[in-house]
Length: 144
Ligand SMILES: Nc1nc2c(ncn2[C@@H]2O[C@H](COP(=O)(O)OP(=O)(O)O)[C@@H](O)[C@H]2O)c(=O)[nH]1
Ligand SMILES: Nc1ncnc2c1ncn2[C@@H]1O[C@H](COP(=O)(O)OP(=O)(O)O)[C@@H](O)[C@H]1O
Image 1 (cartoon, protein in one colour):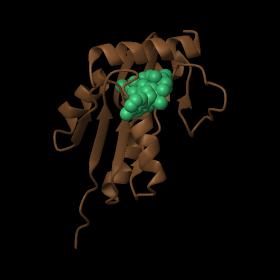
Image 2 (image 1 turned 90 degrees about the vertical axis):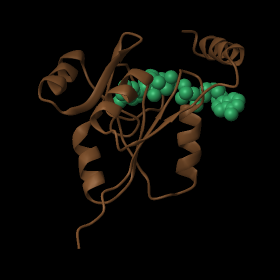
Image 3 (image 1 turned 60 degrees about the horizontal axis):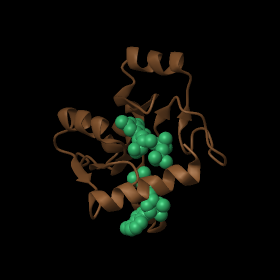
């Protein structure tokens, strides 16, 4: 019998809304959901590992990935490229496992064009004022 394809889940929303927190909580649950590791041209932060948090690339390497159609979607965000390597997503779905992407909004819209059968989750802040306060807090902590 043919195996059912896995489910593509996309978690998106504005910066600081809590996407990372939701994904982190999901990981604690030890579900069988797989997590897509994105490629990015931003520098690794302290404690981040190549291949675990992101695949860290130069702009030239990233542009080659775009050229060779190796990304399901990509976007430029705050001066850096971010993109989802397509092969792992395909393999995972073909093997019948579910996969989640945690990506910003432009990327999520592109995924929706290619995979309309996916499940798209858009996280909203309780209010714009709370989002603004949260972002100011993040900026102060990271001294962006
Ligand atoms: N379009 C797209 N966005 C991504 C991808 N990977 C991460 N992002 C998003 O890029 C934004 C910045 O991520 P990051 O630099 O790790 O900072 P932080 O998540 O705000 O701490 C976040 O909104 C991520 O969800 C990707 O593969 N594609
Ligand atoms: N439900 C929530 N209520 C209040 N603060 C939250 C909530 N979820 C996450 N946070 C806080 O908001 C900040 C941004 O969360 P994060 O998950 O990094 O957002 P994103 O990945 O969308 O940028 C963190 O300091 C986190 O602790």
